[in-house]
Image (cartoon, rainbow, N blue to C red):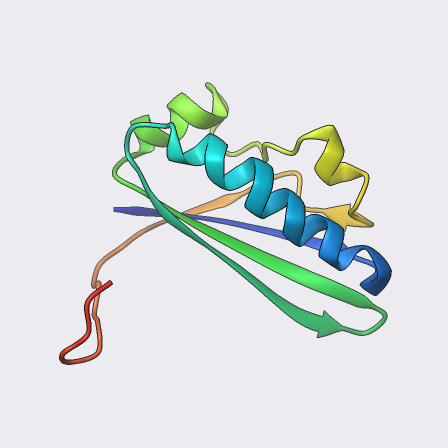
Length: 108
């Protein structure tokens, strides 16, 4: 499994707009891509901004390529997301999952 990591920053007044974009646009789009396994949207206050951390889970780099295109390191950011964001990473990072541990008695 591969984790794709991306970060972005928004003014607090627009943070909800990005969260809604993620829920309404990003999740349905990703859910249609073969090999997509799930996503996390996290946030933290970082000075005067809200920083988002998006982690998506994929079966393989080929599955990511089906979503992102030939340059898998380039961030995929729709104009409606850009409108809510102050800044974002133009590049993403990929990590190979070595261990996938759940709490005892818990299922995903």
